[in-house]
Image (cartoon, rainbow, N blue to C red; front, side, top):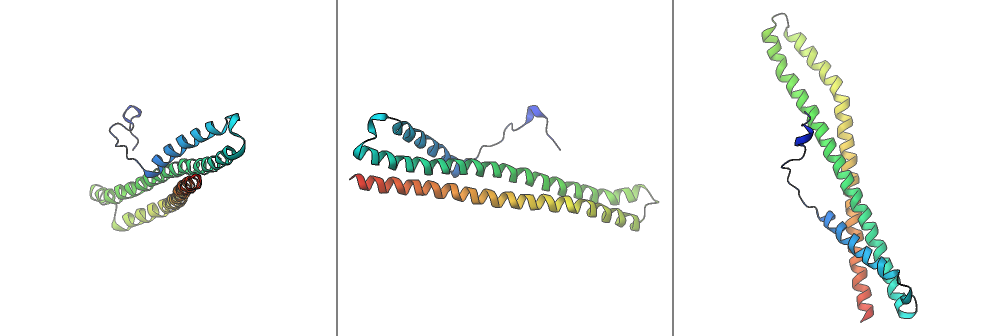
Length: 169
């Protein structure tokens, strides 16, 4: 059930995710902070303290950015695993629906043969299905954990900004 390469993702809606917007903001702010920190004339006295504070914020925002990229990666793996699970379920449904039709068309196929074929099919598909379901669960947990870490790092960076601004006043 693969689509033609020229039709891939045409008309697909793009849904924004909060972690994605955090990563964009985190990357932008971290880049600005690192550019300020590379100035040689601000590495003395009070300016040095401010630069160190900014570097801490940049480090936390960088960690948030890395975690959000990992979150998106694991999210893509969850989607692939969901598609594989759906493929397995669809194939099973097709076979189950076609077996009675085969029995009607071919008189020598009796109920015992149909039941035996169903059992063989389920025995062969069950390990693949369970493996795919387990992978999906693992990827989902990983995506959730890394997404939570990304959001937590962003909140920590925001709190650091507030704390450092309050220190400046």
